[in-house]
Image 1 (cartoon, helix red, strand yellow):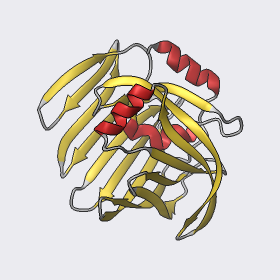
Image 2 (cartoon, one colour; image 1 turned 90 degrees about the vertical axis):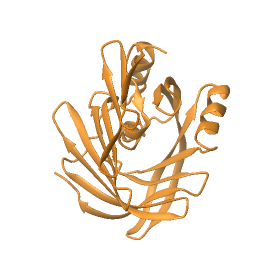
Image 3 (cartoon, one colour; image 1 turned 135 degrees about the vertical axis):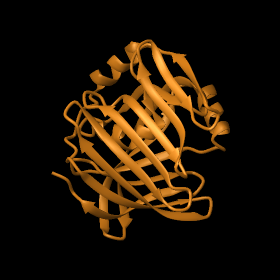
Length: 228
């Protein structure tokens, strides 16, 4: 895994779909018997996008992400839970700096080239080349696994997703892995889960629905600000 993966990804067509500055949408999230509203905001900062992802429930999860406009790779991610810093991931020279707030320690993972943290995929997959779909491989970092592995964004055609505010024609993308061994390990770590993303066919390709194979999901329930 090295800078070649990032070059392959850019060459394959990941590009900025022109996300409106100040876009704010709300999802209904469900996981392990609990439902909550999830607010997702994104801001155009010139050379990068900055997003804020808030879970409105007792856990008060807030995830802040910075991604490059050129290929939507991860610059930085910060996750807070119940008002306390939980996790930080940052691209630095020669690797990835991982900060564990609960354990109060930092570690550096050696890595050449760009990568994609899982918390940034809501935005990153909006940059998929929907006009020329296929499978795109990329450097995928998952803190639960503790390394960068070869992820894949697998195209699954157009589907209709029904929501409270209407039906949306969506492109389906599945998070996959190049190695069967890695795929199996990842599913074991995350209790057997696999993940599908559904993006509106019309640009700027908002994520309408996300689901896993354990009945967890996020589904759009309203658009509070379409942005500028």
